[in-house]
Each structure stands twice: as C-alpha cells, then as structure tokens.
Image (cartoon, rainbow, N blue to C red; front, top):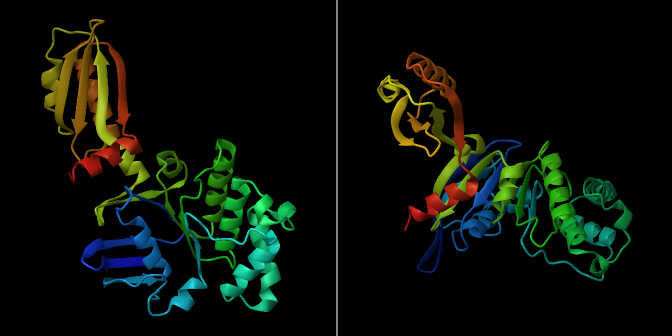
Length: 310
C-alpha cells in the first residue's frame, strides 16, 4: 500500500525529516508518534502530496504523490489537526463542497456525502450550521470530509484532540470501523489512543525513524517474574542454566519469598521458557507462587526511545 524509501525534507538549512523508510500494508492502523518537531506533520504532508520530498521516494498503491498528486488525493483522506471549515455552512453543504474539491464527479457526490454522513453518525446534523456543533461533532465533520469517496488511505492528525471521554471513545470505534476497508495513519500525543486502535507504531525522533514495531512486540518486555518459596536446592543455578534465560536478577522479599526477574533471549519462546522455569522450581523442591510476563507500556517505550537520543 505505502512504500517510503530514504525520505528527507529540508527547510532551508534545517533538516525536518532525514532518511526515513517504512512500508505499510493494506488496512493496517499505524500510529505515528514523536515529540513536537520530530517530523510527524512533515511526513504526513509529504504522504498527502502537499509537500515534495527533498530526497527519497514515496509510492502509494504504486503512485508517486509528488508527481501525480491529483491521482493520489482522489484515494486519500486527510484530517489535519486544525481543519479549516466554513462555520456558517451547513454540514451537508460543506461536505458537498469538499467532495467537489476532491474531484468526486457530480453524479457520485450525493452518494459520497450520504455515505460519509452515515459512517460518522452525522445524518441527524446534516442541515445544522457547523458553528452550532460541539467540538466532538466538528471533529466528526472533519473525519467525514476525509472519508469522502471511500479513500484507500486515511491520515488523521490528533483526531481526539479536545474531545471528552465519550466523544474520544466514539472516535476510536469509528477509526476501527473505517480500518476494515482503509489503511489508517494516526498521529497523536495520547498513548491510550494508539494502544486502543493501532496495530503498529512508528516513532520519530529528531526527524529520523527511531522505532518501527507492532504493538504486540512493543508490549513484550521479554521478562518473566518468578516468586517462589525459599529452598535448600540451588534454584538460581538451575535457572541460569536454562538456554532461554539471558540474565536474571534475584532478590529476597519482605515476606520471605524468592523473587526473580528473568530476562529472555530475543529469540526465546516465552511458553517454552515458562515451562522450563516451572520444572526448575519443582526440581528445587520450592513452591511456585507467581510466574508471569512483565508487560511494557507504550509511554515507557516512548520515553526510552527519546531518552536514548539525548
């Protein structure tokens, strides 16, 4: 769906994006993360064809957005962080206008507007002036204009910005529903949004791609916690000899139990490791009180990635 190779963008002598490469498959939901100034908006603008790269290449369904921007934009929906709207226009009129700008033929416009209204649950507000809508409904209008014509690629910049919890939940459900037919790139500062809807994360740091990982891989710390009763047998020695264990930290707890943090090798199978660890506990004659994986949260990974660049 999307192929980005060595993407670079300069503003004068300032490098906003440097040598960024990634691929995104059809119907993936990918979170684009980074601090302010990391290059997120520049990447999104280049993907949309609004900006041309200084170097590198972009292919969206085999088409270069810089060279064939009109062709790409017909199959692309973009919700910027601050969408310019005409507050006095009715919702339906605004969407009809947006469909015209997008190049949707007149014969298809009514259907396109109706489908967008239905998808965003705006049919009841179609004749309301935009200025009377709440922030949540205005965000829905923004998403509605982005999905006009059923685009193959949807780029959303801070779609839940300023929404209350109920509105944000509605937006998350909407994004998941849209992703059944559309590839989605979601840029946000809210880690919970990425955890709730994304399959994968791209993290930018100082204009460069610092991390490209699935959410499942990202949350896997490759660490197991083990708590057992004390034993006369050398349990620590048994554990050290397991081929899945790369290193471990052992401590005595206040309740008289043994506590181990067991760090697995990158290619070790966690289930096999857990079975072997349990066998070691039995072999040592100890009682097993806890054996579970330690999850990493996205915020921690974000801090680790950005701290490593300092």
